Length: 117
Image (cartoon, rainbow, N blue to C red):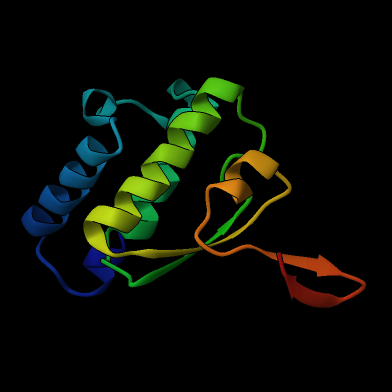
């Protein structure tokens, strides 16, 4: 949808969406409805949707929230891959210490102030 709003052709938008869904490991689920996807798969769709316009920065609020350990780890790896391969920066807000520990820079909010760890 974001590409169609930019007046790109349907074929171009479908190709870009399909490529991103493949990149996040969901090409086989292309024809499934949202209700047929797991929580982790929905997170991956959200990531693909955020990336389809090729942003330089993505703001991610609890990208691994409510996910099991295995799926959370998979999403964390995907974020690192996309950062390394596509040069996309992720600004992530999380309570997940494991996710935070994998970041290049960590800031902590304490008493309304940001402090670098």
